[in-house]
Amino acid sequence: VVWSLKKEKQQLLPEDLPEHFYVNAWIPQPELIQRPELLCVLTHCGWGGALECMLAGKAVICYAGFGDQTENATLMNARGCGPIVSEPPRSSAKDIQAAVEDVLENQESYSASARKVSQDLHASPGPTAVAERIEDVVKNGMGDMVPKPYHLHGPEGCQIQ
Image (cartoon, rainbow, N blue to C red):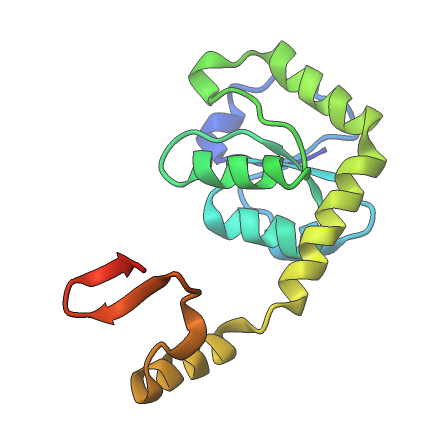
């Protein structure tokens, strides 16, 4: 277990943590997530960390608290990357333990789904293609980007034909 935890919060931990626990105020998360030994990430699901987990193809335990975290957790869970634990005030140590056990029991399934998400992300055209598409729309209009029967070019705006 590798845990990034602020110094002042580390004082709340028991002194006799098991030997296989490593706790530090700073962890090089992107590099750590890429390691093949890492099987799962317990994440608060902020977009940066969620994207790192998805790009690395890692199973996750989603422990969202607020803001975009809940939406990101729902996205990763819906894609089969891992379970969601209730937001911090409403969850217990038993809830987290159950999620860890779930991931360990279903590691193959969660990991396969996470790898598929990673493959999809790596296959996407990326920001350069998006910028090129935007430039094309500015120069040439929407064209056939909007499927019929929707029409955005009339004086009334968006309408169904």
